[in-house]
Amino acid sequence: MKTFLLNILLAVTIFAQAGGSVGTSDARSVGMAKTYTAASRGIFSIGHNPANLMFSDDNHFEMTTVFPLPNLRLRTGTDFLTIEDYNYFFGGVEQPDGSVDGRELTIADKDRLKSLFNDGGFFVADFSTSVLSVSYKASDAVGAFALGVEDIVSFKLNFPEQFIHLALDGNTAGKIYNFNDADMKGWWLRNYSLSYARDLAEIPQDIFKKISAGITLKYVQGFSYAGTEHVKSYFETGANNQLITHGDFLAYAAFSPDMNVKYDFDSTETDNESSFSPFPTPAGTGFGFDLGLSAQLDEVWSFGLAVTDIGNITWNKNVAQYSSNQAFYLTDITDDDILDSVKNSFVGEGQYVNEISTALPTALRMGVAFELHKLVASFPGQMLVALDYNQGFNNQPRNSTKPRFSMGLEWKPMDWIPYIRTGVSVGGRDAFGWAFGLGIDAGFLDFNFASPDFHYLLMANNAKRVALSLDTRWKF
Image 1 (cartoon, one colour):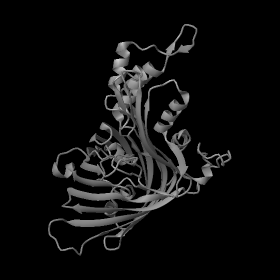
Image 2 (spheres, rainbow, N blue to C red):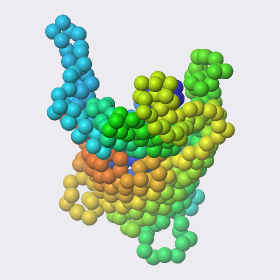
Image 3 (cartoon, rainbow, N blue to C red):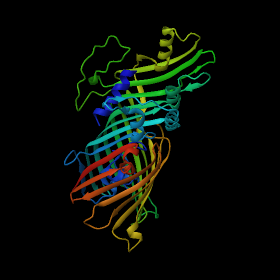
Image 4 (cartoon, rainbow, N blue to C red):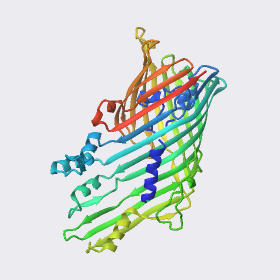
């Protein structure tokens, strides 16, 4: 198990379009606190709401490439530990001779460290890049088309709350330590998408000025995956130092053959160097699709509804299963053989399996947007206001079953001033985020920069996460 955990961590480190209800996104949407269901436009509608491809002029062409700047979205950090906390508890203490020794924790230090893990400890690393995206709107009658290629590397890890108590206090007699809240999932995916949208002018209705529908079809290649299905392990030390344990653990891993990953249970494998390529052999493939609707009430109000990432991935190359379901009652905790068996019951034993299936980060999105300057005649410049509700249907990477609400603003005070974007996001995996971003419209080329956790950029050592998004868009 150590092998596949290490490799997925390395994948996130080496390989630094939206997905799920909480994943990173294009810089315009990120600057508006990932508020995009009704507010996304053109090529940045892909992954949010494909129906919004119709919010463009006829005969309009857009493209994103790695030039002049690559399209990058990066986010990493925790929900419980600040940089200052990390340096204090794990950074050591510098001695007069320049050496660094471990910090000896006081009772107050231990209590504070435990309090940081009251609800467990969550770590996330999320990176995506749009290699190439192209969109073209012909007309309302013909519709709009888009192609996209995107790489996603995402990893999440939840430390069980009881782990830190065990590490600080040892196995206290009479106390039950369970690790049910432990969870880890990570993958490296590549999406090839084809989108189409058109107006539904043939629908008889007199409420909306315009209604559009869109669909995105996705072919997904998976290059690496590691994840726990469940952890229901616990142990207890009795009053007479007897040890009562139950190891119940199930996890899976799969890696591209080009990575030459060696599982610790396979003695027949030889150690080979991994061969990195921009187009590695997939360890799994799958299909997915997005569905979206958009409606314009008038020149001011617009509404959006979408369900994204419906589908799954089948992993069928180098697939390993780690599992355990064993109970022990030990009266002699000095027997090394028995203790090794107990340890193995908590980490599981590995074996090859034919294939596994994992769901894509399916999410429901609903949004409304209005142009404030068209409601208030004396308003300075142009301002778009948008509100979103995002609900994930599973806890895959980039997704959360906790609902997320957001409100975003995009303001263009004057022609010579860049677009100013900001917003707040509440709920989901991160509880709260204040976003800020800037956009420069250079005619045929846009530059966008943003952070969904801008408040942490102002907090220095009290920051918990670092997140940045930047992209460029060609328009013709």
